[in-house]
Length: 289
Image (cartoon, rainbow, N blue to C red):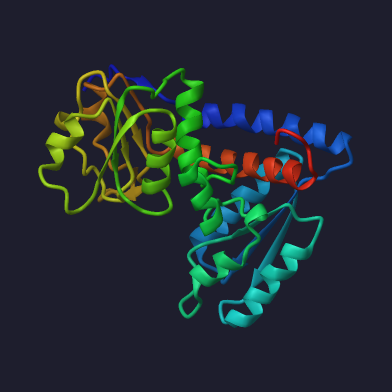
């Protein structure tokens, strides 16, 4: 098949964001502010260990001071909460990230709620979600923020467009819909109970797929000239990573599309770094941060 769509290269764009963050961090350091990120890793889940290692490497490359708190899988809820609260009180730590999922028996919601909202660089604390909905200053979830940043740097404006979001998770679907609304888009959120999903998707000027089902979105569903952001990361039958969208078929109809891998994934880590620098600036009282 011939790919005619413009490829939105998240890997290249993420490098641009990370370079900008490095400059921001350098400016903060010149003012005596050393942005610090604390990552809490519970257990030895292989995927989580890889994610944490990648975040650590990226943060250090941007000049952010990183400490990784490794706890055993059988850590008690009370001990975990105590460790997080100690990080809340540590002035050297501007951002706290608890790597999910947590081992069975631990209450992730309670742990996330215990993070100081000002240090919640994942943007998942209810106060940050409320700020997003109400249009106030907060820390935005990294993956949705990465979607918007990628569109911005590609020169794609959402005002007046119909954005169709597939997925209603608190991590991606709901916050990315709010961000699109804030940019004066008309937004439709689809989910497993949506009737005639193909018809709804076909109405979208921009389609953001975040459901976690390999190649759920067929190429024929895509409106000619639409922009497609594929947030899904799935393991195909051949063992290769694929998105929620049939990339090859959709690429023949879309004006622009993100690949998997190499699309939204790299943007997520870049926005984590951006949130950490922003959190450091705000906690240090810098005007306009």
